[in-house]
Amino acid sequence: MAWETRGNNSYYYRKKRVCRKVVSEYVGKGLVAQDIYLMDLAERQERNEEAKVIKEEKNEFKLLDRQVMQSISVIGRMVEGFLAVSGFHKHKGQWRGMRNVRG
Image (cartoon, rainbow, N blue to C red; front, side, top):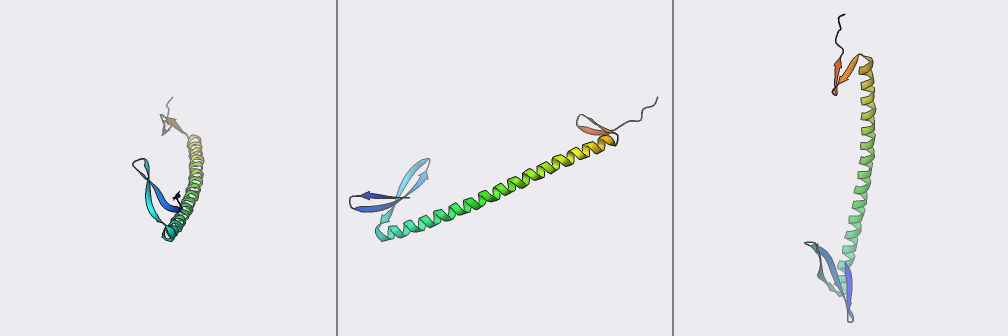
């Protein structure tokens, strides 16, 4: 969003991307352009607030995800310890019970 001055007049242009290029879109001049500018500014602030809320929610989910992964890791180590104490062993990543050995 930009006000451009040419001569004694100010003109309001919007900037937008079209196929990787920034293109100027003429909106108007005078009080009408001023009102549109204020509406655009309010929309931009609203989008920024929404983006901020979304970012905070993402950070909360990342923290929760990290806590869940830590809990899963601890539980996995506890299960491995329990199985090892109970006489099981790991063979190529698979838990197996000990065979009876005759002697």
